[in-house]
Length: 112
Length: 112
Image (cartoon, rainbow over all chains, first blue to last red; front, side, top):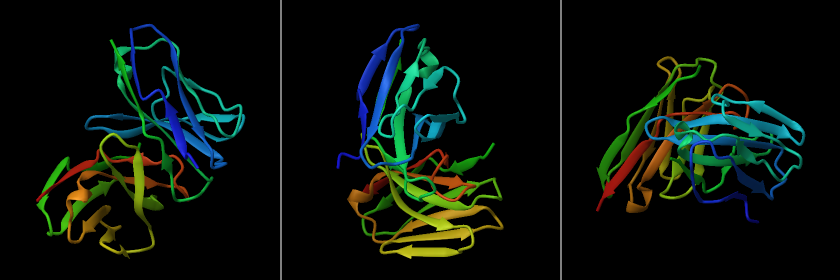
């Protein structure tokens, strides 16, 4: 069991570039989510999904897109990166309604 | 929206008890969680408490909940150097860990 796998671990982008952060889980979890972690601000929810084909916005969705075509994968897309999106991004998954959220090891993104 | 506050830093000597505090504003919080983040890793669930409980004990961990004051604490008995990490409290108004609101995190440093 690999758990929640995020790629890449590190990424540097220039302002205006686009990229996709990948997230995959092998636990057959219905619920998947993306958080960003900024110093002094904790983790904030960007987008989430309760199953394939279903996505919704979290607390800070602007500048990010998601899709959920399979149960396993939940990619996060930055269409036009901005310096304000410099952060550490975490993907997490769980069985829907379960108390335990499983986290990936994070992607550190810098936008110059 | 929900607001979850924690102090940023705590230092304790090895063998002493650590108490990490958290306050939240949403009185409809249903579940309250404590997560641990070690350097370079994702968050791991330590324990959680349902809002109709006052206390929960799990080996060296004791969680206290004061609903009237909206105050949550995590006590770690006999703190070890391996407990050095960032500790996040989080709350949810729904059953389960979906769409959590996290605090800012408390960095615990254990001095040998």
